[in-house]
Amino acid sequence: MQDTSRYAKLSKNIQSRILEDRKNHWENPYRCKDEEVIRRDNNMDVANLWRPPYVRDIEKILHLPYYNRYTDKTQVFSFYHNDDISRRALHVQLVSRIARNIGAVLGLNQDLIEAISLGHDIGHTPFGHAGEAFLSEILKKETGRAFNHNVQSTRVLDVMFNRNLSLQTLDGILCHNGEFEQQEYRPSKGKTFETFDKEVEDCYVLGASGIEKLVPMTLEGCVVRICDMIAYLGKDRQDAQTAKLIDADYKFTTERIGTQNAKMINNLIVDIIENSYGKDHILLSQEAYMDLKLAKKENYQVIYHSKKVSEKYEVIGKMFNEVYYKLLLDLERKDESSVIYRHHINYVEEKNLFYKGTPYREQEKNQIVTDFIASMTDDYFIELHNYLFPDSPNKIQYISYFKK
Image (cartoon, rainbow, N blue to C red; front, side, top):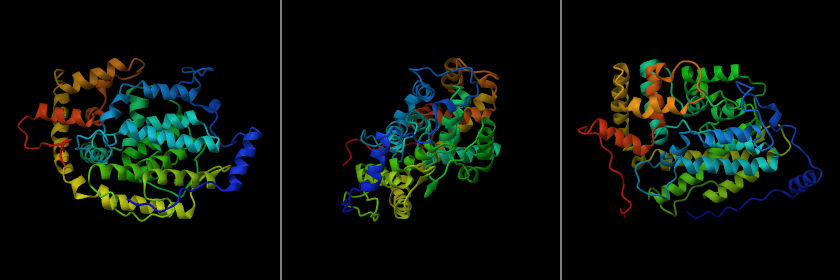
């Protein structure tokens, strides 16, 4: 994949300004300050010198039982035995690294950026956005409510495991959705938990139209939102080459930001810093924004909508239905020998030492089934389906390590 575009650099003017500001110990007046942290229970998780507020959020996320499961949740290429194809564990780290690079230069709160980045996909389904769509279709049919992974991520952290995360972190996770690109990201300040809870409910009821209205309350959340896209656009192209979906010399057409992963990351970082430094919002140049939109469009045409990617997902959709309704039946029968009790409900209740209110098993049954399926890794889902339906005609054959 030849890329003749250049590696961009910051202009001399903006570099001089940044260096002068650093010499004068400038602090960004628009950054989210540690003392502004808001929690549902402000009497708990009080910050100290060695564990500032958003470091506490980072550690809560890292030690959450579901964090390990990022390792076997695929991004785009779900049916490959290939250790070089990205999983969500790498994706959230890339988002964190890119966003902190930008945040460090802009003078933002890097702990908050890291917390949002590491938690933003913790509610994602197995099998990427296809799994998300299948689960949403079933949930909407049964309850009239939509499933979206960003909302589920906040549910995992704020409801299922009730870890008393900050509003700033939860809001950034809710509003992170990288499928909706913008040229300007301007924070929606003054939010409260009442605002947050209403936004969550609107997403359940309105689906995509509710998601589209979300705007982060902090500049840090805005940075993570654009970096979610920066992290996957070029990386998905690398994975497509590894999976032999596209040739190494396939010619993408974006010029300003480049076509290869490293150059796209560098050039978008430079463009954001150049156009956002010292401002109360995050801004892309018109040229970079148009290239970003084009890069995403080309990825959809060549990768995400490729028949090689989508053909096996038809079978996964059928498997989702089989698993969903078997687990729902087990719940309705209160069959405590079922895996939904042994591997999910009991597990959540054992791990959730700080949970208050209604016991988890008494929540709405479709929501419990949805929680369980969303929490699964790709391999667990396949093995569970084989366990529940050994004679089902719906099976997945993985592409071997050794297929040429």
